[in-house]
Amino acid sequence: MAQFARDPLRFVQEAFPWGRAGTALDGERGPREWQAEILGEIGRLLERNAAAGFGEAIRLAVASGHGIGKSALMAWIKLWALATFEDAITVITANTEQQLRTKTWPQVVKWFNLMEGRERFSLGETAIVSRQKGHEKTWRGDRVTWNEHNTEAFAGLHNLRRRIVLLFDEASSIADSVWEVAEGALTDEETEIIWVVFGNPTQSKGRFRECFGKFRHRWVTRQIDSRGVPGVNKEQLERWVEDYGEDSDFVRIRVRGEFPRVGANQLIGPVLIDRARRNEAVSRLSDPLVIGVDVARHGDDRTVIFFRRGRDARTIPPIRLRIPDLMQVAGRVAEAARTHHADAIFVDMGMGAGVVDRLLQLNVPGVIGVEFGGVSHGGGNVDGQGGNYANKRAEMWGEMRAWLKHGAIPDDAELAQDLGGPEYGFNGRDQIQLERKEDMKKRGLASPDMADALALTFAFAVQVRGGGFGGTPGKMAVEYDIFADI
Image 1 (tube, one colour):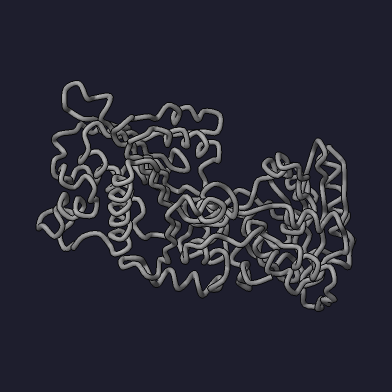
Image 2: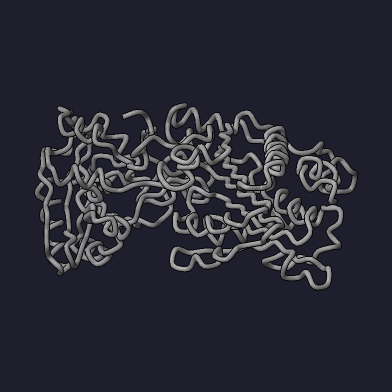
């Protein structure tokens, strides 16, 4: 193994049973081209640094699209580092404990069990440790979880005149404080130090982004488009491109391996909001009148009753209430529904379950409770799991964002602020999820009560009532591209 100490590519080619019948690699020829290039680059950098006396750490950052084999490559680097250098220390972490436990570490386990020479190490639940007597603490590879309030797991990571390898998976979502503590591992002189960070470029700011910007003179960087990698589901990638657009931030992040544009994590931008405030959309007689009710009971939040008919949300002014009594709120909603002959009333069930119950007791037609955290019913739902949206609230906001391109809203500064407040991200299923109200308040923003009430009017498809409510929960009548240019 020592002959591959500065040649990780040869190690990967020789240490695993590529193409061997009866193994998990039967039919496999070796690492993918991009993986081989990264391994080769590490080898070249090691040779260069060795000639310079290892005065500088090797720093390598890879931003990529989805599904290209990042976790496998990280596993190979970790195993190469351990297997080819006595008393090497390696640490691997990820953006979340779940990612580390269920995705990153299982890849390490898989490839460890395929590796030649594995009998020299013991594989545990959270570490790989040398079997050589007296080296159990000095020759090991650990998986380490972190949180912003306990970054000390990375403090004191030193291995003078030996080898240290630090690996970050899904690095875009690892807190800056963890990066700062990890910097402390780069101070040992005459030591092989390799810091490798991988991830989808989901954030337009933070330390991972700075590897490609502010600190790019310190890092060797690669950005990899998933479409150029064999073995990736190209049909799924093309569906994303078709649905969201080649230059949408969804495609930039999940396919092209490029960072979102500055401010792109704001779901609804100011240009779109300003356009909707100036639009002169006119509703049609066939358009149903829909009411959205966002219910609040305490604090600075307010209950808001919002009205929308087709493309027009201006004709009936929204009603703002500071009433903690849900029965009184229900009375005001019932009065508004009957006065304006509403075809559907969608009520937030988070605080409004009592309002829904009371409206049903009053025989108000068209009342449906909406669970913000429930499964979405539209937005490209192809697997019964909510399609492109993490939950119902994200779906409604997505539908509302698409509607704003042609819809008209009141020229109301508070509504405009609400619409532009929430940011979005992606969960582990690559579904869009909206920032929580609690997190917005931590950023100093108010709860977007008015915007949530308007979003509720997009909960389900609605028909004009003819002696009864004709709408049925289901897929929205029109699918929108919520990431089209604004």
